[in-house]
Structures are given as structure tokens and as C-alpha cells.
Length: 170
Picture 1 (cartoon, rainbow, N blue to C red):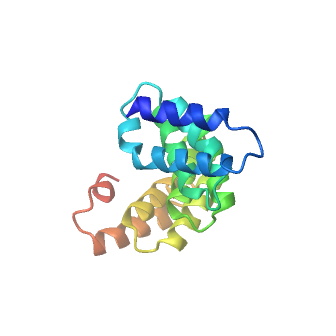
Picture 2 (picture 1 turned 90 degrees about the horizontal axis):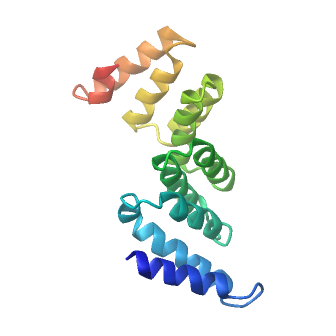
């Protein structure tokens, strides 16, 4: 699998700018990487795979999913700055992509930007109001900013999902 993606990358990079197939090649590369995302998460070169997705996203009409996955790979590889940049690009490109909003919110909270993290998590919850994981993560992010609201949010999740592990852990 790794050889196939590297070969695709080489063909893509060799295509001259303005070549009619250049955009299609980058798109094909992004699709290949997205479909093999689980395998790439286990490779040592997560940064390379994430960088390829970041680059390919620029050629896609709807780059949000590629950028979302790039951010996940960057984070898995330990590069929080690159993960943040990918998720910010994903949110800018596709504001309705709830997972990108949620991941950005969690990361911003971890980076010591709780107000920005809460804002992103609220946006994610508005996009996906039935997602208990987003609600619990928002409650955790709000805990220092608005403890009563955070507690109410956790209770609401537990009312609908009494066995929700993340809610029970908070």
C-alpha cells in the first residue's frame, strides 16, 4: 500500500503545473489517502501522509474531509500546530463540517484557549445536536468557564445516554 501511494505521489509531483491531469492526480491522491487512512495511522510517516492530504485538499472542490483527516494524522504524529492549521482550513472551507469544528475546539481547549475552544465546540454541537460526544466535550471545555452550564450539559447527556462512558467519567 505504501509503495502505491508513493508511486501516485511521484506521478502527481511530476505532472507540470497547468497540466490538465494535475488537479485530477491530486484528487486521486487524496482519495487514495482517505480510503487508506486507517492504514496510514499505523505508519511511521504520518506527517508525510498528512502533508500530502493538506496539499491535495487545495485541489479539491470540497476539501474539508481531506483536511479533517490531515489534521487527525498530524495530531497522531504529534504535530499539534499542523493539526490546528488543517482543522482551521477545514472549518474555513466547509463550516458545516461538525467533526472539524469539534476537533478544533478540543485542540484549542488543550492549547489553553478555552473561550475559542468552547466557541468551536458550540458550533459543532449546533451542527450535530444529537452527538453526545460533542456535548460532553463541550461540557468539559466549559467546566472552568461556566461550571453550572457544564454540569447541566453533562446531566442532559446522561438523561439521554445513561451509559455514556465519557459523560460518566466527567
